Length: 575
Image (tube, rainbow, N blue to C red; front, side, top):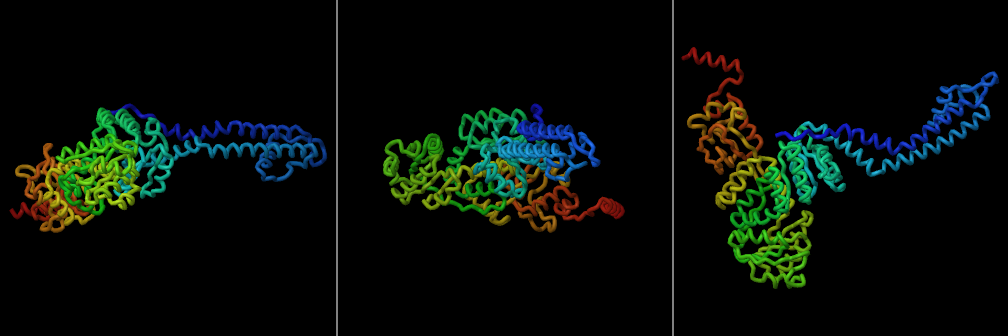
């Protein structure tokens, strides 16, 4: 369903700066025009003398010409005749008036250049032109905090374009300082303004999606609503720390809502079940080439002490209890422990940290989390310590204080959004990973490392349809085609491509890491992991008939249509 027509703002913004100049400079321009007009008129009325000494007056054109080069300081001299004393007196007065008028006008112009509204109008005009010049698909990033910066860097590494809008001027300036490979237009403004978000690319024909990652849930909700109403065809990914706001977002058919608070408990639950599964999930949701993260040791299953505030602690406690853990929750408000005066001793006493297997500091303030971790270390040096790191810049502090596991909400958001943007089929694979077991996850990691190295492999989806795999048409009927046969190397069919099939989608059902003997059918979808060169080789097999014939049958067909016709004629004659 198409939304209502979006307002065309480019012509308005293109002339906004001109109209602002004319409006602000109206009085100085009138003053300059009056000074010039009076000077020309007076010079034409004052009597003069010609070359023979006879009385004469300058014409309007001669007066205009003289005052024009005088006012511009060019100064050709007295033309067409030598001036009388009265004319010289008038010209002297006109020169001083012109100097005063120009000083007045230039002063106004300088103040206009420094005016915030004028500079904003020029910036928006330049931004509009930059967005309009984008010809390839791009994403609209609303908000440029830590999560958006990490996402933008990954998108830039992948060669994908994006446009940024943020309400803080310093963040907009940071987009230019971050020096991306491709031009990244950035606009300072409130994304809740429909005109501005339309200007930022919502109405652009090549906009392929919107990502709302501001720290304000209401702003993200407003962006979701605006996009759903004006561009219902665009996918939207939004951040929300409130379940109520998230439900309102989903009411506008937005399925991709990322809640960093929920993800904290999810990450710990996955680690409790399978450290290898957690390693695999984090690795696959990172940008291509990211080194393989370390695999954590199994987490302790004894009593856990959680020191948190509000929903931070309550939701995490509920998640860990769902895994069968004994959890003690110590409430904190504004950095103070509610059961006491807020010092370290009260934390230890309230949670009985001395005999706990693990301690979790999960407040919205990094300073509070740091002193909670330090208190837990003093009370129980053997406890497994987990901390919520709200600001990525504080990573060195959390490392120094000695946390065993830390979660940065910005990284969680960036990883999940990148996974949804880069390959939506990956999100059908990842939720099943924690349920496959530690041995399975470790085996998949080992296979990926053996095939692609320790950098995050490239992920892509293939569909065995006539459009995407025309060379396989007719081979997917009957018993189908073996997966291992499809993954032979077009250069040497006895060698297998370094590709790991992660999941097979057929009729809504998912098969995790399908076996090489599985028979492929028409319209099957596969999530693949490997290297770019192997991906290109697989595409060649799927699209070129001679290559498919060699890979699947071992027969080398002529590449051109003429040679294929001649080969068929030769076969008929020999038969």
